[in-house]
Image (tube, rainbow, N blue to C red; front, side, top):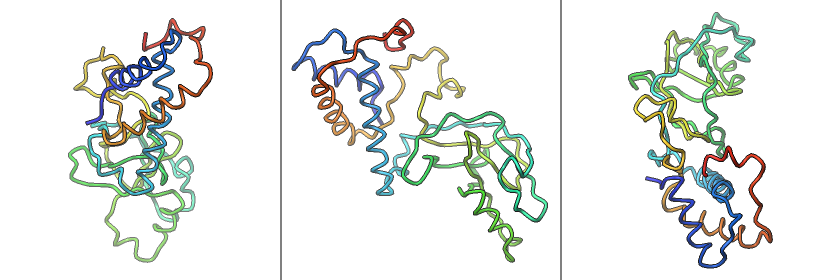
Length: 223
């Protein structure tokens, strides 16, 4: 399991203290550098088609409500047959971007018994207009502008497993509502964090000038 955000910041800060003490080096700034390199290395793992096997990195939204919409909104006006299209009622938290698109590991029925296949609107239009599509029993989804879209299902909700950019603990019933962001997991595999740490420390030490606190630091979640 990846370390917490607070632990990852402390690791970098402790190394920096041995080299350079700077009162203006904020936790927020350190985390922004760590996060930048973390995303870069995750994309590298995605290039190698390795990222999806690290289940502990992904978070589950167990019950995301759906609503029915029209084909135009779903970018599927080219579908010739009747097609009922559902969409997540609210935008989902933005998934991290991999080399091949959003890092969504799994979308299923609520009980996980039916797994859906990721596609694109244009691909689904071509597929649905093919001669043999009536024999296709697979379920499909696509991600567009913060929503997931689902053609030809009549479900009220879905289960989503993804690597999200931000904190989604407020959307999970089994997480305390007052959990500090420092105590949430920094979702980078442990074996990658040493490399992230090295890049972050090198950038901070060679930056020349550590940015001072900004005017909005009274709102800083890391204070």
